[in-house]
Length: 123
Image (tube, rainbow, N blue to C red; front, side, top):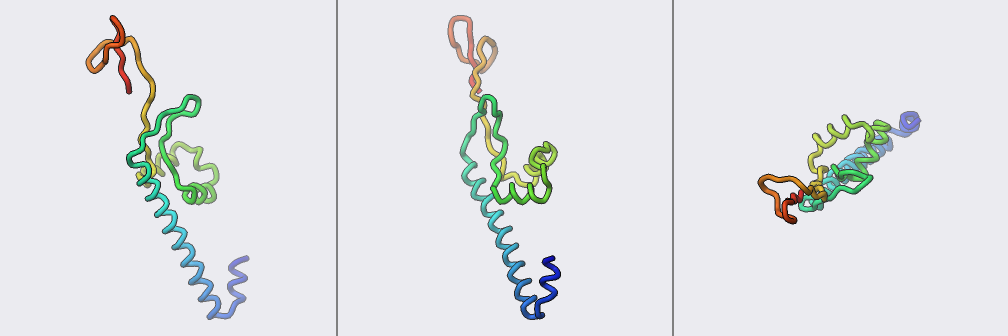
């Protein structure tokens, strides 16, 4: 449909429309890249904790990237293989995650005394 509409335009207008569309695609890609870099900058020093019932946060993904891939490959975000490949190709999307759990009752190096006969390790 778009191809038919473009073919019906005069040559000089077709060229102008093509240049505009190319510029818009490049602008969108640059915006996506800049958004990912901003997220990486925001997440660089932040630590995220796990949430009961939700789990561990592994990535922070720019909305443009999310919707681009969801439109290009529907259902891709629920595929663990896709997520692994996305994080491999976009390491800036990874976030640091820290457990908030405390283990009690173990003995060994690196544990702190909690009470008599008990030691605690905080992760």
